[in-house]
Length: 83
Length: 274
Image (cartoon, each protein chain N blue to C red):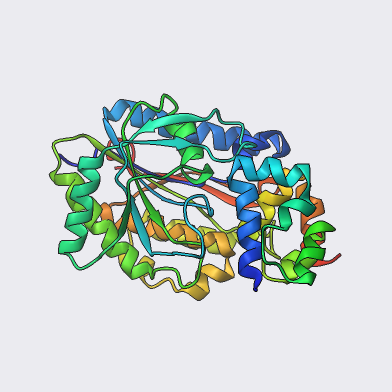
């Protein structure tokens, strides 16, 4: 599929408490419910923020998602810029 | 009844979620300006609020995007963000006023979508938290698509704002208007943390002058250059339309680096912004 599904997964985690719980319990198992490409799955499961951003995940999906992972603003900026 | 209260304010979530990150003097000036707006709202006797706002993938996703959505719900809940440090609560709606807005817009050739169920994210909850913290006035949200290109044009937002102003002025209710979003910021994007102060000052000057023509000429390219979040200023443009070009006062402007946003607050309430 496309980055659309990846964004949908991230939005579900951000937005739906039950999805959030399921994702943080087992990201791997949670991701099985979405038709991701191998590269998307790898970026997600490695929590590779730079790769997720480069794939086209919208900043206002990615930043809240990374806030849930306790990522600070400076860390986030470095990650999206690949620094 | 004439519009009883009108303001515009940024809604950056750092103002409640990580306030301590900001330099104390800047935080105090922003909080002080919110206090002045809160006092102006209370003094205005407004009983109902129309909030011109944006959302952040809370209700809408790429499966269905419209330019505008007017909330027709009996009640709303928010915030959706568990990390915002604002207590989750219910806010009354005003479906009758929402219906008037929708019908008036249709009659003028603008067809917003409407929703009987919406939740509020920081885009609406942060300004309500600071300006109307009792959350006891019914709210009608008017949500602008500021996320997914193409966003509505500034001219179109100005026209929708004119409809809002006409409906509010004809109403027997004492209606206050809050426009929220901006100013320059690029949340979550490559230029996250970059604040374009020149853009912000120019935009605030046009708003203060009530210069509808100038505001309507802002292009998508100009907003995008000031960061993805600058599209949220479309709601401010609509406010100028609603107020018929009334002049306003900049109550505060602070480029707050740790909040990654040019934070602006303006008051258009006649008693205080003559």
